[in-house]
Amino acid sequence: MPPQNQIPVYIKLRVIALDSHEIHFRVKTSALMGKVKTSYAERVGAPVNSLRLYFNDQWIDDDETPEQLEMENDDVIEVYQEQTGGASF
Image 1 (cartoon, rainbow, N blue to C red):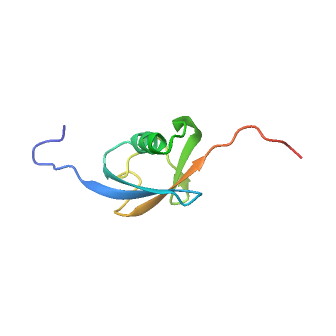
Image 2 (cartoon, rainbow, N blue to C red):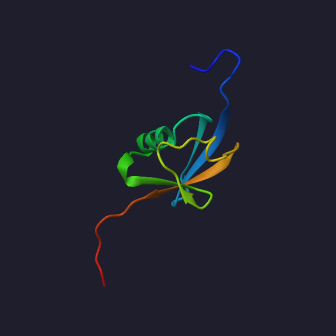
Image 3 (cartoon, rainbow, N blue to C red):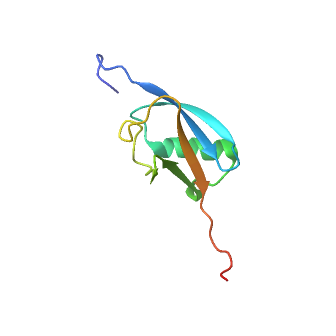
């Protein structure tokens, strides 16, 4: 719990998939991005371990926070579903 004089800061993030499906999240700047990914996975019915989040030309680790990533209100996070298998030509 933050000290009494330090109020948690919230920002609104937009998570967008390749199919243009968009979900908005209101998160603390100190929240772990793994929580955002888990919440997104639950909402769209995808396995959380198959998703990757991408922001400002870099992959996001689950233990990073919006503050560490210098995110601001209405920033866009792209979500990609990892693909396994497939044929080689």
